[in-house]
Amino acid sequence: MWYVIITVVLFTIVNGQSSSFITVQNGRLTLNNEDYMYVGTNFWYGANLASKGPGGNRSRLLRELDRLHSLGVDNLRLQAGSEGPNTEPWRMVPAMQPEPGIYDEAILDGLDFLLYEMNKRQMRAVMCLNNFWQWSGGFAQYVVWAGGAKSIPYPGDSNVFDSFSARFYELPRALELFNNHIQFIVKRTNKYNNISYAEDPTIMSWNLANELSQHGNLNLTWLNHTACLLKQLAPKQLITTGSDGHSTSKNFINEHASQCIDYATIHLWVENWGIHDPHNSSATFPLALAAAKKFIDDRAAYKDKPIVLEEFGISRDNASLSSTSPVTVRDKYYRAVFQFAHNHRIPATFWAYGGEGRARIPGANWRQGDDFIGDPPHEPQGWYSVYDTDNSTLEIIRYFASMATKKSSANTSLF
Image 1: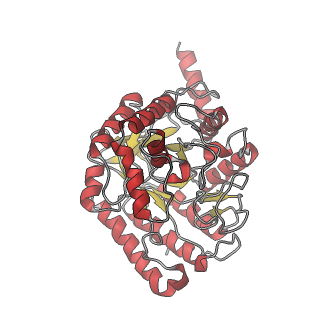
Image 2: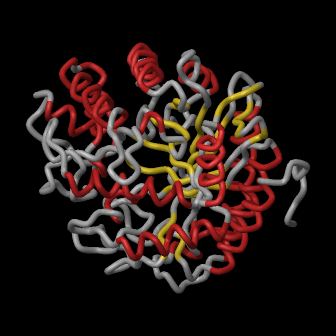
Image 3: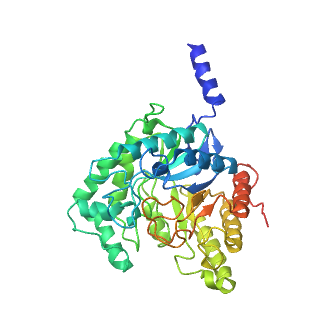
């Protein structure tokens, strides 16, 4: 019996596989009773890239995982739910769930394969189950599926879309359909290692949804109920919101108050929030740095639970969308934001990794058949993507990934 146990342990160690779950202890993310700090990236398209079906490219996937691992980027935020139909505009396709309760087996198999390969590299996954925004279907598609409307008012007037998407919380049928998806995914067994998702330490945590509220319109009763459902289904894994934490300090605290939420999330978007103008960086970049520092410092004052900076990014110089254009401003911003987060021992996940993918037409919207890069289908392709040839940016990422794993590295600086 002891021989069998020792053999299994040695096999796990030799093969470099993740065998321990990330936990929360004394207000910190921990792994094997040690502080778990990391630099991660948003890799939302991972399941599609790993698919054997349309849009999939497993040889590229393996190369990308190897590149990220070599950089020390071992935490990937993945989309673990996307909704059809595949004919909708500005949508990642093929969808994982083209119709309510009907799944694309190729995408599910891709997610299995991705997690299996991540485990080989001791990488961890944050699994995002839904989305306030339409680029994966998300809340808006659930509203349509629930009979709340015949079609989605795609963003043009953001207030109209935001109100439409938030109707998700008001429709019992929409909530039921999403609960069905949660049950389906969390209870899934990976075909490549025969491990239930809920028992897989590769999965660090579950996001309820990406940026699940705008303008303080989050239903806290729903949040608590859904977080506790996930905690019941996956008690060994962590649960978090996916919130951007941008509204107000009070809303941020309320969004993470549920006893079933293990850690808090924040997103930082100095361009989307109108602070940084890439066409006038000389005047606005200092304001962006000051705003970024204040935002992180303010949220770091929250001590009830660990915090993760789950998204941040900035465009290339002069808002260029070419993969060969300079990234001087981006490099300065990445250095600063990684440092701001590191000073508070906050893990930081950049948006987003484009790797060896390239936009068909820089600045165009994505369409099926194009390379998956870091920019979702509804956004100008090339806006925030970090490519495999952005060597100066990658070296900054490598540096802070290395610093994240050093116990005494807080408040050390690259400057």
